[in-house]
Image (cartoon, rainbow, N blue to C red):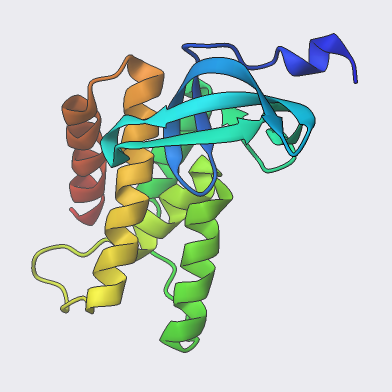
Length: 169
């Protein structure tokens, strides 16, 4: 294993972990597990009050990545402006697809979920599970947009909200 591969992520870096969204690397520590010394990223997900330890050699493999570039963020915003694609498939199937997109850690895919599940006030009611998926996707998107632009989640939420509302007009 080459040293350069290892140091892609450093303490204090914000990273995106597919299943949990944006977290911050607190440290890199060595731990003996069953007699094997493992190097682990210690990642804090402050919002969820959760700390995760990820073996450094597995990080890229499981899809952990650096924050999106501002370009990707503006692409995600463009995606939000698009027309919702509502598939006629059964909800359970669509829900599964949305779930996969949210957990892919791919910002554009997450933006697609937000776009497709966003409802203007006068539109039909959302089921509980639709609302759950929408909120999960929205939260992921907002957190990453905030982290990329320097950490103001309220401003990011407002920005995303304005794009969504503006699109309905």
